Length: 300
Image (cartoon, rainbow, N blue to C red):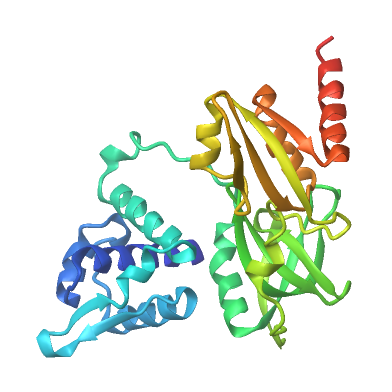
C-alpha cells in the first residue's frame, strides 16, 4: 500500500510539472490512461490529500490558480532542478511515468534492481516529519536472529542502491544507521520524541564516504593518483563532495579528499584496480597495499 501511494505521488507531481498548469479534469483524463488507475478517477478529496502529503513529505507545493479556471501548478519549479532530494524525485518521476504509460518500453529500459525495503519509505518519512518513534523488527547482516526495538528516526539517506535511516537508539543512547532492506516489520508508535536542533543530516554525513559514520577514524586529507582516461570518469562522477583535482598531467591527475577513510571508501578505491594509487596518508596507502596483496594470494 505504501509503495502504491508513493508511486501515485510520483505520477501526480510529474504530470503537473510536465503540464505547467493543468485542471483536475485534465489530470483525471491522463490518470485514466495510466495502469495504476484501474479505470477509476482520483476523487477530489483524495487529490487534495495527495497535495498535502506531497507538500509535507517533499516540500513540493502544488498550488491552484483559481482566477484562471482552477489550474494547478507546482510552485517554484526552478527549485526542483537543484541538487538534492527534489531533483532526484524529479528524475524518478520522469522514468516512472514513462514506464507506466507503455508496456512496450518496460523491456527496453533496464533499471538496476533495488533490494526490498521501499515499502517502509513512506511510514519512515512520516515518522521523521511527525517526530514519532518507530518500532522495528531488524536483522542485520552480522546477526543470525532478528530483534524488535524502538528507534527515533532523524533522516533518510540513499547510497549504492539502498535506503538507510539514521535514528537514535534509546537503548544505546546514540544515533545508529539502519538499512531499510534489513527491516522485517515496521510500525509507528504513539510515542513522540524531540529531534535535537543540533542534528543536521548533511553535517552528520559530511565527512563520511557513504553511510558508515565511524568516529574512530579521524577526518584526513587523502591524496590519490588516477591514471589515464580514468581521470575523466573521476571528473564527471566525483567519489566524494570534497573531491578536488590538485594536479593535472598528460597521463595522470592527483585528486584530494577530506573524509574518514572507512571500509566503504577502501572498497571504492579498490574497485578502480590499477588505475588508482593512494599517495597519502602513508598508513592508508599501506593498508590498501596489504589488501591488494591478500587479494593476489587468492589467485596464486
